Amino acid sequence: QIFVEAVEMPDGAEFLCMARTLEGPQGAFSERPRRTALLLGCDIGFRDDMVYGAALPGTAVGAKVGAGIAATPVGPACRLCERVGCLARAEPPVTRPLGLDEMVTGLSAFDFQ
Image (cartoon, rainbow, N blue to C red; front, side, top):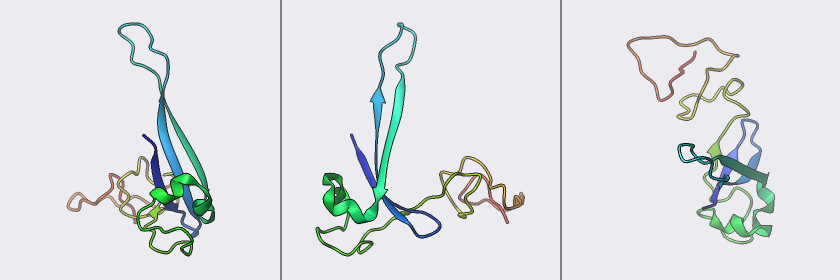
């Protein structure tokens, strides 16, 4: 299955991303198969030229770029991204101090100030 999503970087640049996994050869009986993730991305302006651009919800052929698309906000890497409340955050950002408060829980495992 191919997953298609519109994403938006912190600087406002939007991209059309397509992702899927590839199964590798089966190893020995007790080994798990090797799985590789493949991600392709292009500028959102090319979505009308790509078959997978029609898979975006709320898009129509010839529609203005960004019209009706709920782009998912993403960052360059968890250590460099300052988006607050990210459910996919794996590491705290190096640019901000951690907000350690035992009485408050946030959306992310790493809240910061």
